[in-house]
Image 1: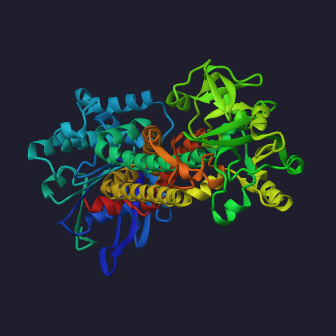
Image 2: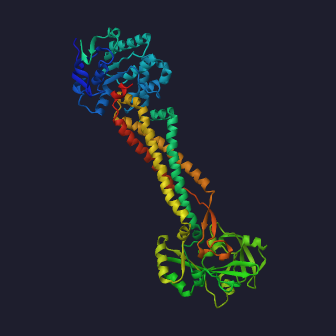
Image 3: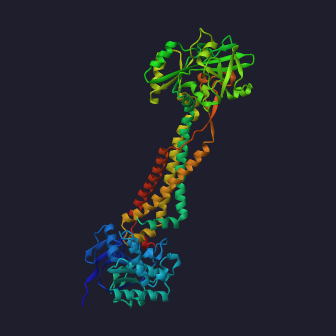
Length: 222
Length: 412
């Protein structure tokens, strides 16, 4: 069964001054596909992820996400688009230190006009799925690295995104915890059918993906 | 704006929050206190007139005294003070008729010199119930005010010094009078302060039938804003009279009051401006610390407006608490300043004592600083603290608009 394209980047380039970090890259991600972007540090994979997710605008090229051209959108339009369609998982978790686990999960819902009970219900549901029901009211400082990343995954899922962008999601975790997080991502991909574009520099992790894309010096090698 | 997030953020960074609130609070407290003291100075100098219900006092100084400062040949018995010669009845008629004058009262001030020294005697016009020295009736401590000829009221301290009490007899210029009351002069009422008070007719009798009349006129205006207009009219229509009002006290205090006014303006602007500048700088600097947080918010789908509303909520609460704290601190400082006494110098012509009674012609009287904070000042202070918050929000908004989530997250 063929699946439609959820994400497509065409001839993408990104320059910072004279330095061209991403050089004419084109790639697609299909619905429910788990794609790994592999390459050494500094090869431009995180920048490419930012371009594809709408966090950053390309110097050249186009990005289409869920059938919508996002390259020409304003910052606020992009923010709203990310809120409704995209989930992020970062290497350094990026949780808000003053908010509890459930509030961090509900963070993308704060600007939306829904009751706080509904926000809490949705956050609780996801945290329980991540086996963190007992850590709901804890601050990030009271959580382990693996727990923090599970909270971040729950946050990425709270708006039922079509695609999750994961930037070195286990880069800051020990191997055992990293495996567990990868297990959760695989499960999400298989059970929920969420598309995942994951950036990593470890070939081992990429083996679990449907597709592997190698990057070197800002270009796609394979 | 999410209140839970706002409160958690402020509580979590309690030191930062406290510094911001205190910064605004101190700026507002200085603004409130300085303005309250400045207003208190204005009130203090107007107290002598306010206590008598008058806006203007008119007197006719002795020409010789004005020209040369020389004492007259005779300094014995009853006489008119140098600064208070008789006001002719046609002058009084002219005063009454001047446009803007609402009512007029008069009194006759006398000095009596004898072997034992001197005393001041005030003949009070009992027909005016609330204007001029008749107001001393309200300050009776004992007995009553004279109703008929031959009765006097003594100033309490004078009576104590001369061992006189209610019911005793006193002799003025060889004539016997009975003491029917004792009064205490109210603070800041030096222009009505005499040793003995008696009905105007008795005072005129003491001076002698041919002299009669009055020597001080008290005018109340229809509207205080007509003050300079009425003073100009008096100067045009009556020659050789001295016209004083509360601004004469202000002129005499000159240095203090003028410095106070300019000082208060400059200092309150500096205090508030400095506080606003520091708060804006502190809050905008905090944004650099919080750039990671702002990057996360934008990455997960918060628009620029969502972020700004959140930051505005924090600034608003801090400004509000800072403003309220500042006003409370201002009230406290003003309460303490209310215990201070300031000297209010009396112009020469309004000094009821002979020149030799004091070292200087202008007798300094101290008055407790009447410090009070009006509802208007409170409202302005609160509005200023919120305006400071508004300015901080504006600059913070400009800064956050430049923050791109990818740039922030890449730096982590």
